[in-house]
Length: 288
Length: 137
Image (cartoon, rainbow over the protein chains, first blue to last red):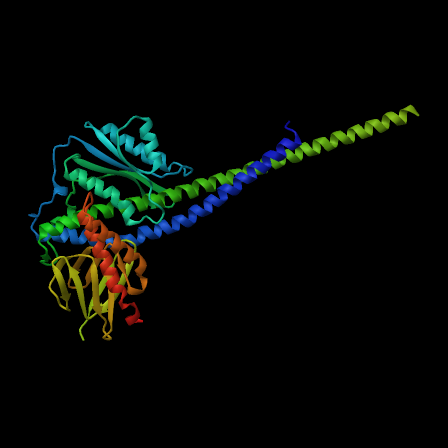
């Protein structure tokens, strides 16, 4: 049996770990709330923008063209992978990476990766994939300027026909207990199914529909990327919160077990000492 | 006086939602005004000053970034990258941004001219709107 001092040291160690995981759990909970709010407040904007985009497309009778809508023979694909910079968040990063790898296996043409967040880059670098560009995970405020670099790169490269399709891998935030890693197509921009409906009113445009589309589409792409980053952030914090809760709980279990073992050991040593005293006294009494 | 529902949305938040009697906005092809019962319309906006008249006759000014203004029967919406009330504007920062952009444009080597111009426009719009801060208090 381990010595008393060893057990005491282990209990102390586990208690320290529990303190850390508990703190991380609470921090993740607070950040999750803020990330959720962010995702929530971006929704009206994104929905209205999608609406306007549809209306503009419908009103122009589908005549308006834009490079971001151009379909080409697929010779090269870009996959944007959004992961976290840090670990200790359960299966969050692994889930996205698994989904991305499944996607990579299914492709018959070369795929270049654009990674956001260190974990994704590290993984695919080890596998020897081509990483065209890496971006650090945006700060928790997720400012537009931080997202702008990603969308600018994609829009530029797609416009120059460097890539013929662009996909996005991120963790969709379903609920605190569930995040769904998904791969979605970003470009070429597909007309939403509902675009067939006639515009509610005949809109007029200034400048012309085609020019307007030219500014609307890039912005919409940016908004899509922004939203997926914000959702990934919320998913990451939720995953971390749950992982840290589990870690705190199992640290508690360990402490209970160790304390029991410690008490056992202590009692055993007391019994031992008592035995020694009693047998010593006996021996002395017999001598007399 | 007749009014209509007007809102400004940014990615970060629903910035403002009010009934107004008219709006003057910086369109890409010139400043325009929206009155009640305007026909459905979509405008592209450039960074600038957006003015609206409240039903009580007072004016409100907002510095907006690039975006869109969409007139619909039930409401008029502005979608923009940034929106700030005069009191929220950091004047010193806008001043610095303006100087930086002007410098870049002055020695036009190796720069993204369009980006520098856009930065200049944003800074100028902020400075202009910031001047209303004292007037509206």
